Length: 144
Image (tube, rainbow, N blue to C red; front, top):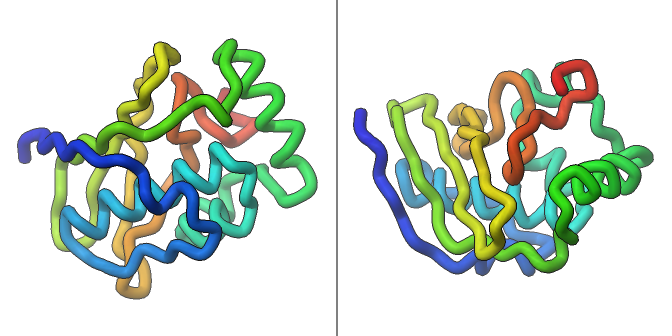
């Protein structure tokens, strides 16, 4: 399927308790925004809730090492996460059980991370190999 660009301001990013619940493209957009918000704001619980069991099994990010991982990612990007805001979500390859989403941001950091999502227990979750939703690298320490 083609790419569908959906412009949005990340309302879910500011809410620590945002839990995406919708399916389809709207739910995928909401899940991608919530995952970015949790990552950019250092909320491990949000990152964990956004991740499928498969992603959690392959990722090396924990509540204890998320702060130091974020320092490393911010240093590599050359910009503070607190200055980054989601401005849109592109989605592609949407099926009833899987899809990919990539975020656009208000910052010049760039983004080349199509994050794979799976429909897990009625909600979109980051599937497969966990990928940081900003920049050009994966979150798993064994992957880059």
